[in-house]
Length: 108
Image 1 (cartoon, helix red, strand yellow):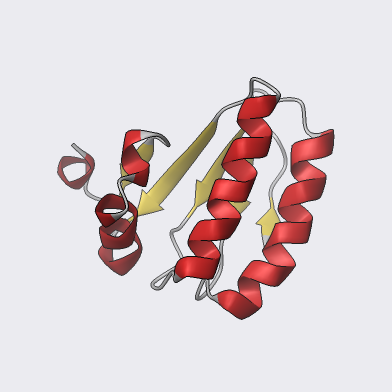
Image 2 (spheres, rainbow, N blue to C red; image 1 turned 120 degrees about the vertical axis):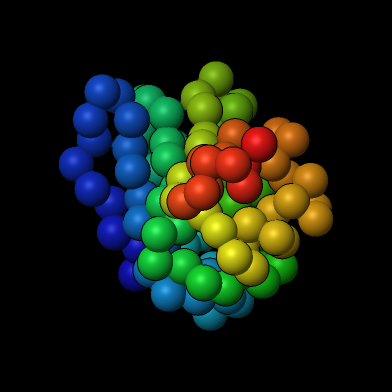
């Protein structure tokens, strides 16, 4: 289950624990939909505890991104490295959704 921390500075931080695979994406997508409909600030997805993402996880991220941008809100991916960062870059998602990796040089 995703962990939604207390909002600060009109920004919601969502921790993605474990693998962001098809099983987790189903759960996350319904929670992302609720967040996109009710939250009135920007959102940061924190990948600190995530070491794997598959196409279902990417689909859930894009789902959230589209719904937030439709409401003029922003999405950022934080603390991402390793395989998830490689996937995000190979799909060129980092050109649309800002990312901050563990190693700031890696996000440049």
